[in-house]
Amino acid sequence: MEHAINLPAVHAEVAAAFARYELALTGNDLATLDDLFWHSEHTIRYGAAENLHGHAAIQAFRKGRPAAGLARSLRHTVITTYGHDFATANTEFSREGSATVGRQSHTWLRTEQGWRIVAAHVSVIEAPQARQAEAHHAA
Image (cartoon, rainbow, N blue to C red; front, side):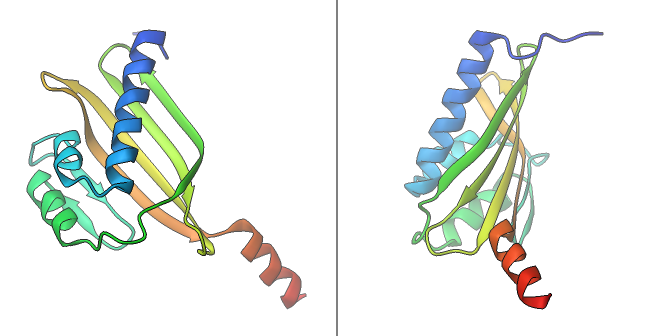
């Protein structure tokens, strides 16, 4: 079975949902963030320091999270749609003054309410420049 990859209209819809998510995240718009995650016990978000199973756990995490320092710059964002109802969005991000590179993955599903995140993963690694500098100093 072959799926149509990156149909232009579907890709535009997911890109708009992803942009809406990013604006809500950096603006700490909890209502929009809660809305964009699928309201199901099957929804998963693995964060940099937490494993959240179910929409209620994700919502509780957001409510308890500090609202400062959320601004970030994105790069290497790749959105791929598969058919009309499924997509992934992956990006790298950095925050001013941080020596880490963040990585974010979303799995999006078209629901009756619109595009929703059904699985998310966030992790951070040391910035490549910092690793190269450490390697140089160790040599």
